[in-house]
Image (tube, rainbow, N blue to C red):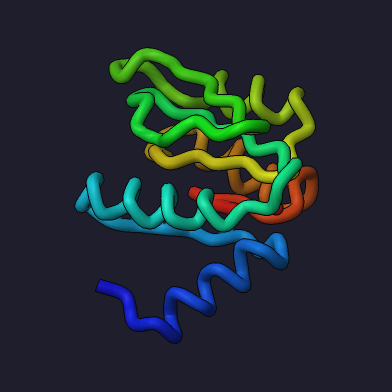
Length: 117
């Protein structure tokens, strides 16, 4: 469970467009935290998620690119970048998509989650 100070810090970082990396073996906890941050997104924020499991809630302005749970998210991250999102969410990074996601977070997209408008 997060303290109120940590929750406020993460929300502020997300709203300021900072990159947020969430690392956890607890998949449910990771998706709960990402979902909570997405709830804080301002109206009109274009969010694109590249994920294989379809676990994130869809909101207005939120595009979810889904792939096979057995495959890599690398092509999904590439497709997501072509959509010029305000925020890119990559909840499951474990292969070559890590390089694409980090490259996106380093310049092409302001704020990101494996990340956060």
